[in-house]
Amino acid sequence: MNMTSTGILFLVITVIYISAGNAKNVFVNVFCKAENVGQFGQQSLLECEVQTIQEAADAKIRVVTWKKQGAKKPLLVFHRAETIQQPGYEFAEPSWNDKNMNVSLLINKTLLSDAGVYMCTVMTNSGDGESHANLKVTAKYSVPVIRSIPEKITQKAGADLMCQSDGGYPEGQIHWFEDGKTERIKSSKMEVKQTQSGLFNLSSKLTLVQGSNFSKYTCVVFNASGGKETETTFEVENAPEAGGREGRKGLDSVSKIVAPLVVIGSLIVGLLLALLFYKRRTQQARRHSTKPLMGDHQEVGRCESDVEEVGPQEMDEKCQCSLV
Image (cartoon, rainbow, N blue to C red; front, side):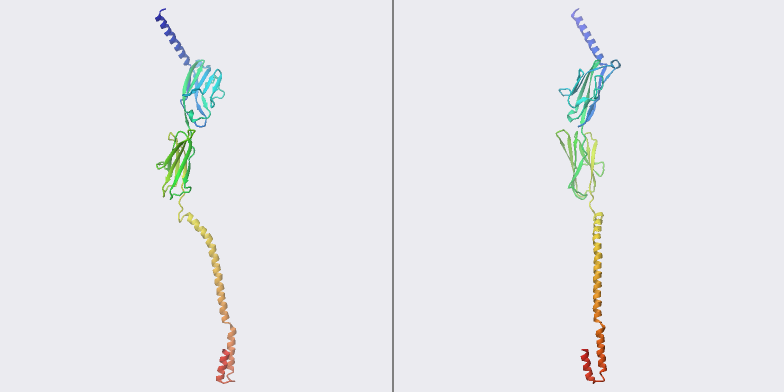
């Protein structure tokens, strides 16, 4: 056999070997969900399943490897009936065994650093396969809290409204809306701070001009995709009016105090007038007493009766003395 024949034979054997290997791999396929979303601090699931054809229905898994792209060490390895896994990573099936075709990966406490591309490789006695899964990690923002500076404000006074929402990811936005309108206020100023854990804290300041007629302001938090996540509404108190309810309440309070005083004062004045009237009547009665009148009449009578006994001149003198 010459060199040419030997080369042709080697080429044929190689093709047969490759074809046999490819035919063997056709029996086994690994399918993973391409896009997955996990919540920060919660469990995340990377769904992955081994599928076989009818001829390989009794396939037995020999090796499973889960590895994150860019990492040096695998997160989970099953080999020779033993599972080696890093803390926080495990098979989604608690009672998983080499006959179970569900090789999904469960991340117990998802961190922002868990985001990325994962590769699952499976080897069976009927063939091998692998697939990729991408994980995105998000965190929901807290319900925003609104506070005013100063603490108590009215529609007619200028003030600042501060809105804050914490613990979200990726970076979101805060928008203000007035009186339930769909158009946002563009005069607000937002600040973004990233914590050591990678989460974002959002805050926004809205300045209210003096004499504003709006009574409600809504702070809305939007996530990185532009979707509305949570909101809070702040209501501004109406300024008290002179003839309004507050004024009437003040008048009612004053009336409750003044009315009894007026009644008591009227009674006192009435008593004083009665005493004064009684005093005057008493004095008049004393002045017109009947005793002095009767005395004068007797004196005059005596003078008249004595006219016959004395002369006219003596009578006048006597009567004048008696009247005096």
